[in-house]
Image 1: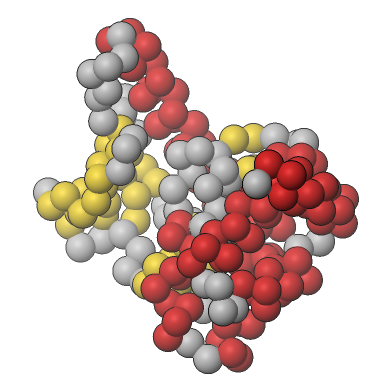
Image 2: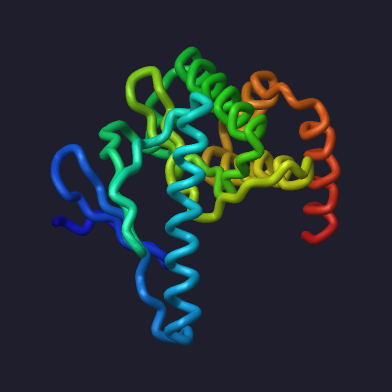
Length: 196
C-alpha cells in the first residue's frame, strides 16, 4: 500500500488502482479505551453517512470492508474542486456549482450534515462532483446545523476562491431548495460577523 495523505485523524492509502483505504490513527495522548472507542465509532459513523448519502443519489465513493478502525472505498480519479476552479471557464463553473448545490440539497433533505463542506472535499470526475471525507458529519434535522454547513462552504469559497466566491455561492443557493435553511444562513452569518 502507498500512503497518499495523512491528516490529524486518518491516513489514506492506495491499495490498488481502484481502491483506497482510510485508517483512523491512534492518538497516544488519549486513554487507550477512549481512543479505541472514538476511532471505532467515528469510522462506523463515516461509513454509515457515506452509504446513506449514496442511497439518496449523492455522488460519493462506494465503501466496503469496514474494519474496526478502517474501511475501503473506491478511488475517485478526478481532480479536487479546489484545484479545478482556477482552470475552468464561467460556463463550466456554473455547471459544477449547480451540481454542488443540488448535492448539498440532497444531503440535507436526508438530514445528513457534512460538517466540512469545502472545495478540498469535493472531486470532479467528468460530469459528477463527488463529496468525500464525512469524518465530521452527522445526522441532524436541525435547520441551524444545515445552515452552518452552507456557511462552511461559503467561508471556504471566500478563503480559497476569492475572485469567484460570490458567483459560486449564488449558484449553490439557487440550486438549494430549503428556504428555511437559506434564511437561517443569514443569521449564522450575522453571528459570525459579530465574533470577528
